[in-house]
Length: 393
Image (tube, rainbow, N blue to C red):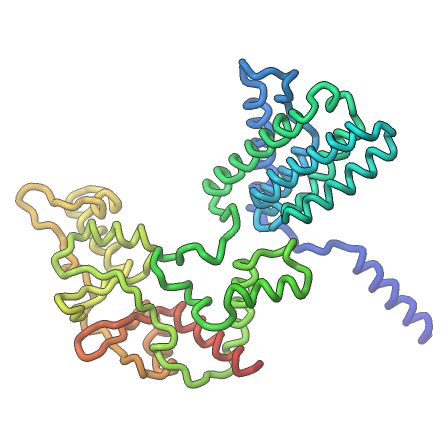
């Protein structure tokens, strides 16, 4: 029974190893990837067949574009799917195939050499793109294309068609709410200020993340920024166990966007849209704190204005001047006052009761009457996660 049970367990492990290695796709992914790739291939074909473009000059769709579309639209976060990888990878593969066919006409040898050189060139140029192998095979298996087009085959259809696909992928993901090309470490923060996202203010730097990817040979599977996001998420999950001696100055936002009490509500609304903040401090000369405007304050003000004037919320928020005879809502009219404040030396633990009850989205950090920073819920959670991970190491 023991040997039989061990054999069954081994079989189960083998079957598990041969099973799916990726998670189940969401309903959104099931729609977004297939629909996007289908629309892109139709659009690419239409663009390459526009009147005036000579099919004999290489303007037509080739099979490897289907493989490129899978990467560009189904897994846009992969380094293999980025614009450089796609365009340069397909292009250099086509170049290698054409060069090989100029020298070697044996079908077996040309296929093997073209594929090998294509992979070599893609790795050398840091442009690994699996469909590039299919581009090389297409040319090697059908020398008539190369005989007709020569090195022009590299430009059209390969580079031209791939560039169209990449452009369509950028547009598609912009419309459907995905980030493509993937995030870069040098990108501006989510609020368009010099402050890094809360999860990146403590812990590993860009060079550290690159070293991790290189050490584990994962640089072709994951980007630096996405690795940072995954590490931050893991640290936040582990942060619930302990709390260490963190001070507000260690993780507060310092590059503040503020308004004066006389700032029109429409201007405040525009700042919320531009920066993606959840709160904006209201200050007087010398950064003296007078109050804080939260998004909910703005929404409530817009609702009241819309009920009075029978206008939509967003129209009211966008108005920088009121109708004749009516006062324009100002920052002082919608800000929250009497909020608790903390100093830069306040321990992080003291912020928990201030932020956990839902009454405030952020706590100002002050020196006397001056505001010098602000701590949001995301700032606090990320700081605790980072501190816990650092002490556990």
